[in-house]
Length: 254
Image 1 (cartoon, helix red, strand yellow):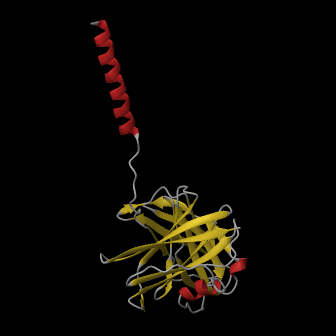
Image 2: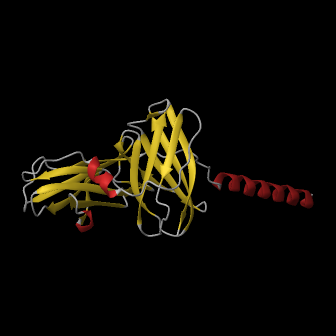
Image 3: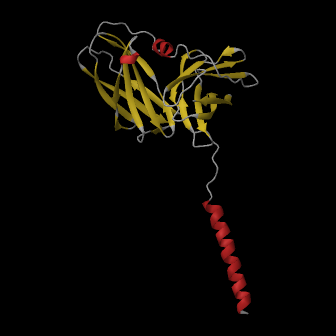
């Protein structure tokens, strides 16, 4: 009788252990996370030599992002990006991050926020007028900074939507790399879509990079690869309820 009881108890312990292991095993989540949205706010009037408050509001869907890993502003005068300044931003309230900056002289400036939050990175940009200068399309500055990085790797997605990822032929770790994506729908540029890159190395947790539209159907972003290797980049394209496409590309980083 004791032997029978011992066998039953041992079986229950084994079953309990298996059940616990099944419960503790994390469920695989293949869903694409909601995109991080960042909107820059700058004063309508900025005078040279005066301190101006820059702000960016960060949201993920309907939720204010109050736990961003890093938020900073890059500010430069037109044609002088290499001499630009960086200003660290601090969280104010309800997903709004602010920083103060003094624009030394009159001219056309570009303000680009670098937001890293919840494994995503986004870099919206606006142009600002200081003094009597006239602001132009903010996409111009971004186009200038990405000049010369349109050659290299590409991948097309079959069907009505075509996705082509472009990058420099030689990419080096720990250096900013300009990436661009051209998206066509039925042979025409697909404008006003949400485009983001899922970047992973050797199956590690991916980084998410949100792209900005610089011209109809063309989306750009900068990214810094942290180490050499062959990265898998999944380009996700969404627009409304009808378009949700993705394609994979491999990039070698030296």
